[in-house]
Length: 189
Image (cartoon, rainbow, N blue to C red; front, side, top):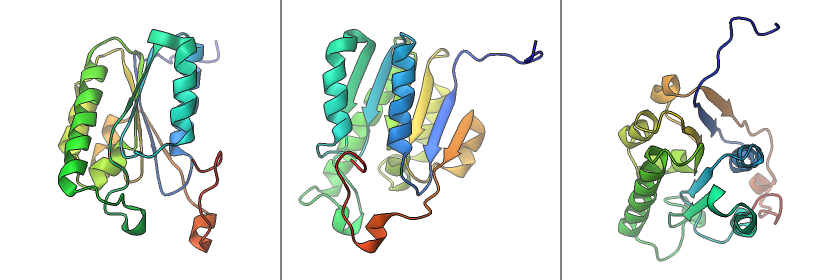
């Protein structure tokens, strides 16, 4: 056998991080793969408050996958991101939304009802101080033993690298936003 000596794990922690584009897109691919294997998936989204195409896609496929797919949209938008920050959202509102979304992530990952829990943009929430590194560590270490986690967003804490099984860094080589071009529908959001 080609893989003699290899073992399987009941669950894994997958991290998509880095400055480049594609972290959420990769997590959506992981969601598709899990659903295709008839697994139960929870997609919990931090930060993205505005309507983005993945919200429409998940809403549409929920009719097909029904109780196999759970979606929770939390967060109040970009936080402390200059011109990208959401207007008229207070720091208190950002903190409250991050806490509510984190509470949902903890509840969902500990329930044992899901094979995969995706926490999209959670790394940004930690890096921006809306959540603590200790909260992220708790999410990872207290999850159900059979539940895999996918954590996305820039700046996954290096001190938690040992808690992840797979870490992929999306490196930005070039992005048209740097040349003052706005995001494109269907490509960037």
